[in-house]
Image (cartoon, rainbow, N blue to C red):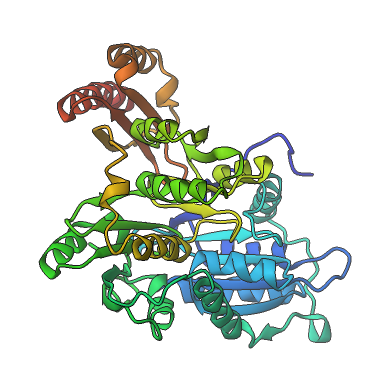
Length: 453
């Protein structure tokens, strides 16, 4: 029996993720498919699978598919698609599970497996633990179902994806006539959706990083590498630029003058709009501990409250559901519009911003100037010693407390371990860039010394 008290260890904050062939391999994918596809009551599970553009995606798909079919489940293959499209399809077609093969913003050498429950939300930790126990069991004790009891590979997947694109367009309130925009597709999942989405719209649209080859996903492209987009926006005199991550559940924007519009600013823009329309439930949104202090202060001036949760879109999603709220997200560009979809969707975020852009005649400066972002610095430290809890050691605790006292009410220090990579993220907000760097470097020095002991 699985230990109901333990936390999953293969699953991080966003599914199983790691280097293909090592941390994540075809055996793990097959076992995931076997467990998810098997019904103890002989119900034929229906499962949608999508993937991003990584070369390893097709191999992981084959393993997942074979595991599901051998367990008697049916597979709906959406091919290259976005993570949120899987959430949409599962919920709207009464499927039992959805699986997305993606490592999001990670390099092409990594891949991942994200699993959605039938309501379109990420599966809970108890099921993650059960899957892990099955993966790590030397014996495969599940029955293999053959012949007429085996699952079937359905051809309906591509129709589902077309329906998802129509769903996205249903929220667009303008034909975008006169807008001149540029989109960075990160050589990822967005490349399979964006050209179809914009086909009949009147905006002038330019695509960059739209030719995936299996290895160039996120490479100097997308929401984690905005430099190229910023330059093109300024050089081409675009009204706005947009950048997706590898699986298109995140979106960041660049204003006409090259200024980055991150997830915090997007949430502010959408929250203000919802409040003006009397649609913001309880005048409250959900943010994470990484959100800028400036966002909270700007929202407070507008009478908008926040619920603050741990980093991870599944925590945002859970809090939105529990409190019947409509909007939440992360600074990184995961924005959840809960009345439309239960998970972050870069294209739904794009549609919401385009609606605002059209409403404000192509210029959002007046709204965005209302939020004053505190200088912020984030340093990622890749630790080597995985056996030490570096953040709970006495010297680390002492330096963190010392730096927090130094910042007082005019800044904050936030430190956490990544849920998807062996990284410690050190983030500081303060009155100046210089103070941010001083605080981060002092904390980093102590953590590095502890790691190297």
